[in-house]
Image (cartoon, rainbow, N blue to C red; front, side, top):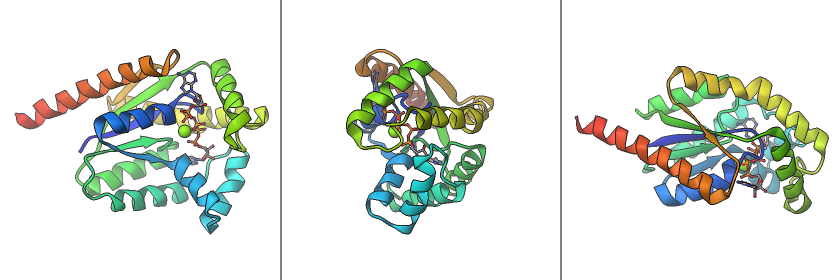
Length: 200
Ligand code: AP5
Ligand code: MG
């Protein structure tokens, strides 16, 4: 299996690039943000609980998102690989993901981290907030809170994968297509390396 994490702050383009990557490389897209918004839309108890956190720009509790990821992995036993978007966001989530994947005799191959300046991120999110209906995009205070949470709880996850030699940083500003081509080169290189290892 080829498992990838697309990492980066709110608004860095994880969702935008994930859609293109899964189409080109045939992976299953797992976005915890999208899964949570679906639960809210369906008015499930999980969705109602999650909304309280999301509207304030806080993280939803680890056990909730880990449980969601676990059941998604179970739903796709034949997957060629997964693309995780917006997960893991805490060290506890990263450790839980490692355990879940090792039960399936697989692991994370690569973490691609999109790097975008905070001014550009705020601009993108406020612009999207004009039309998206996402309650966490319309208020700049909530956007700033999301950045704060990212810095304190999520950035350490990059270091976690850096220590495992799996992190690659990619400049995330410029055209969507140019960024996609840069990400694609990283993925192709990693896939080729994995294939030549397994052929030995
Ligand atoms: P989530 O849905 O994951 O949101 P996020 O990480 O805050 O990031 P976004 O989805 O807003 O941005 P993105 O990086 O996907 O960028 P996008 O492609 O959309 O999480 C939402 C909330 O759910 C969290 O705050 C938390 O409460 C909860 N949650 C989710 N996962 C969780 C977890 N694992 N643990 C706990 N809680 C969790 O692009 C953004 C905008 O920029 C778009 O309008 C896009 O069109 C535009 N854009 C994209 N690329 C470019 C470009 N190159 N140039 C110009 N504009 C661009
Ligand atoms: Mg997203």
